[in-house]
View 1 (cartoon, rainbow, N blue to C red):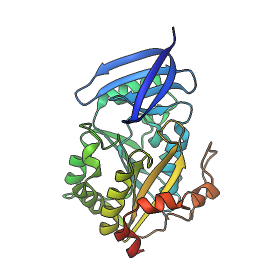
View 2 (view 1 turned 135 degrees about the horizontal axis):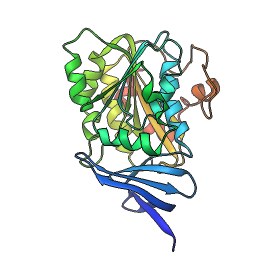
View 3 (view 1 turned 90 degrees about the vertical axis):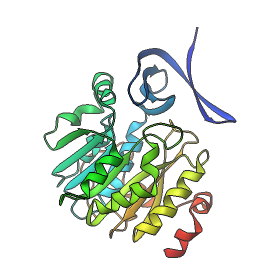
View 4 (view 1 turned 45 degrees about the horizontal axis):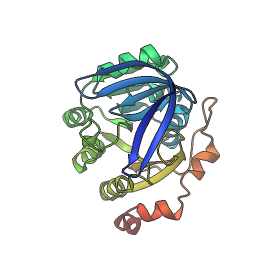
Length: 285
């Protein structure tokens, strides 16, 4: 008998993965956590019924979220990751020369424990002495930074989607974006994924509208990630100076997806994506 994991992308569309086995399942204080072995992409992490990462294509998302901002910043020494408990993003961030201090704020310690057990390729960075893990709500952590002199050069938000009652919903609010801006050093950069535009177009519109009002520069880029609904996945950046569309630093390592050409091309938006970005933001560019 075949086993399948089914995810509802919308009320009219479902995604299905054939799985060999379920290897872990638990309800944490924040979310339902599952690990399954898929036939196509190997081990996969599922949170509240939504596929988060698979071994087969995780490198696309993590390389694009890490290298686009870090190679657009002249000297990214201090990096904050909100979420990212599976370890894939910190793995890529710590490959960049000059990064001295990375804080990863993950709300759910069980996610980190599960990743260490079932995703060793993701979590090789978690023992790096430059990485400091804080188990706290990301929005609350950022508010606390308003009272400290320590700021960050780059802030990356690697969270669950904003839909529903999950822990990611508070990371897409206007108050959160204001706290992000306040936690950045002069010339700092922030990037947050804005989801699958064919299924959640309102997320891209909402975030670009708010970030465009708060930051001197708001930019959107995209990648194709097979695991995520619709394949196309977007990222939105708020910059206090650098233009993210042009890498200014050399690629520090071998990659499976990211290249300087891919970096530049990711900012070429099809008209469909351009039309999802709120008109108020277009007028300020």
